Each structure stands twice: as structure tokens, then as C-alpha cells.
Image: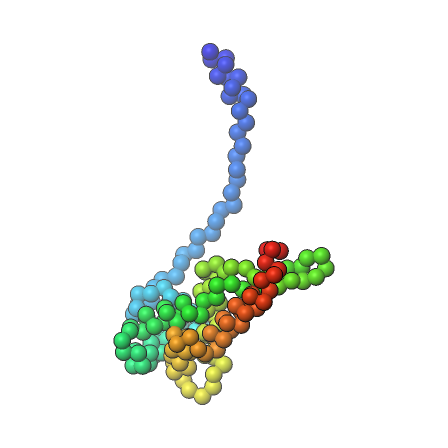
Length: 172
């Protein structure tokens, strides 16, 4: 009987699958005032030349301005809803097929949705001229909350391009 077990063990082939180790970052620490990772990410996005204290002052002043304008909701709730409004669901990616380049619509992963939303809000408020950075940021967040403004326009254009190129989705 032991000979049969040894024969079976010899026949079985053990295949080891080697996986690449996945990088697990240290993460982002929540901001001290609102205890939110999204606010901390906004501060990091607004920050220029490593001046985090200055960026946090701009963001917190912007939230104070939002609190003055919207009395029925907390500024963090307004910001989270504005961010949700700006997040894109689909985007187009270029793919070369047989000598031609097609714009193929693809769904956007949640992490990239956040990255694009933060980038669009940052770019929109930086392009505005005239007022302080906190006022410009507060106005852009309020515009996104009300589903208007530059960041929402970019989102809508992205969705329109994806809709127009829906015929090429089978290349994905």
C-alpha cells in the first residue's frame, strides 16, 4: 500500500505560482480638523513647493466660506458631494489597431476617478483670476456641488467623447 501512495505522489506535479508582490503604500493620514482622508488629499493636491501649512490654510478658509454660504449642510458634506459630481464614470483611451488609432471608451477605476476629480477642481480654481485662492477654491467646490463650473464642464466633455466613440468599445 505504501508503494501505491509513493507512486501517486510521484505522478502528481506540484506547480508553484510565483506572484509579484503588491505594493501597499503607507496611505494618507486624515487631516486633523475634519478627520477626512479626502480633505487631506485635497490639501496635498493644492500644495505647491511642499508648503503644506499654506495649502491647509487655503483649504480650511475655503471650507469656512462654504459653511457661510451653505447653512443646511456641513462643508465636508458639500465637498464630498461636489467631488462625487465631478468624478468621471468613463473616459477614452487611445489604442492603435491595424495602423489606425481609435479612442476607446473605458470605465474609470475609483482611485483614478478621485485623481481626475481632484486635478480638474485644482486646475479650474487655479485658472481663475482676481480673488484669493481660498475664495476661488470655495467657488469651484460650490460650482461642482451645484453641477456647474469648469470641472463639471471637463467631466461632461469626457462623457460626451466616450459616448461618441461607443462604437469602438469592442476593441477594449
